[in-house]
Length: 415
Ligand SMILES: [Zn+2]
Image (cartoon, rainbow, N blue to C red; front, top):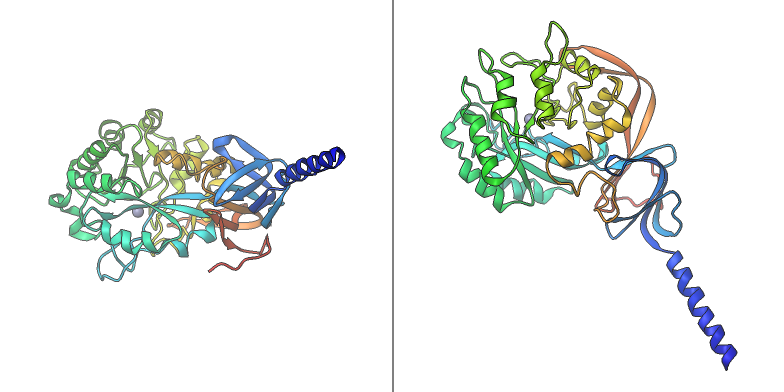
């Protein structure tokens, strides 16, 4: 009797222990080079996912998994965050980026480039946000966040975006407070005129809702001084987008004669203003970006400014823009940082852009392709490089949503 109960006890503990050792994960990513800037990881690691969350990051993870992903030779990063896009797709004619043919549905452009979160840069305003929620957010697997336009109509184009009677900080702040899950700040864009009304009303909304603002610094003749915008009108944590633009009607951050970053831009960075790429159709020039990057004036967010006018032009997609920064001399870990953890902090969503245990499993698996590649800007200025990023796999909330070459075993064909 005694011997039997000892054997039973032993069996209980042995089986019990082995059951603990054999965790069952939903996805196990093996052998990839993990770059997780928040947690200062830059080495080969395994990552285990269960119930939509990251449950373990370690050098060797054993255990069963429903799917095993072979990431050898690839980079495993947090899902990319594109903090400047236009996703208010719809069918209203002559409506620019609001409920229009010019804006694009996120899922068609995100997962195939490792992006799991987009921030719409001001396509809806407080009047059109409800339509945006039902039309874009409700129909996207991509996480969609929003900088709410200070103009109630949103980015309807033309005269609508000049109508200061529709720039209502109180209503914008109210709608932001009612939609905290989605609205991460406010946007002012395309305002033309030699005065500060549009910017100041946007900052007022920011103060009322305790959120940052993003500024597309319109255009004026003569241009409004950028130093005044950055140092006197914006606050710590506010964002200047299209930071490497060289368009008429605007002042630039790099002096075109000396090729040096202007001292006020460095001062603004020091004082906590953020700089966003917002590449777009016309808002990025190598003549600005190359000298700036050489001097170490890096962006806080690499972003696309995606719409029909940029997707097939020089911009193309998030990874093409990131590759340009690699070629200009930023190292890979820094390029990943300003496409993940840094923008997560800019939008005050620190649960995003990292691979900490317990976070929702949004992951990009990227290949750094070797070859001869060309990158050009809107004026046809071209640089060449030997490396280019390509997306192998995207995981959104613990589900494989894109698998270029079938590196998951077994392959599950998602729809
Ligand atoms: Zn934009």
